[in-house]
Amino acid sequence: MAYWLLKSEAETWSWDQQVARGRKGEPWSGVRNHTAKLNLMKMKKGDRGFFYHSGNERRIVGVIEVIREAYPDPTAGEGEPWVAVDVMALGPMQEPVTLAAVKADPSLKDIALVKFSRLSVQPVTPAEWKRIANLGGVTL
Image (cartoon, rainbow, N blue to C red):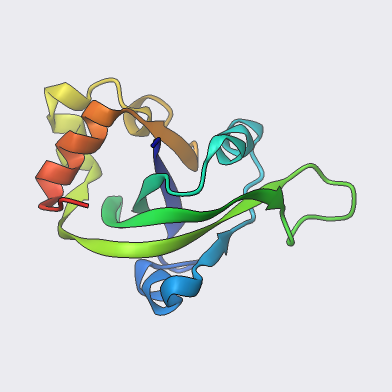
């Protein structure tokens, strides 16, 4: 299993909206960055991800699971190379993990969230996953 972090502005697509989709999940679409696209293409069914509210919140608020692997993004124009995956909410962070908390933790100094702050779909190492899950009070 691989781990990821997916960013969304709460005003565009929020954790509450993701939760409301239930087991059906929701396409993670609209990604228009080639590195992020490559990360979407690496995702496998069953992979886990952190749901991150970017913008003013800047915090990890929940855990999602990939339920459908990469397919052509339905929001892309004809012939455009973009992809989407479907994800469903597994559960909230018991305590949201802020970007400030991530930056303050020496064990997370190399996480993509800090090093590549504008990347909307990022890999998370198993050690980073475990540490953030611990900070957020989740065992998913």
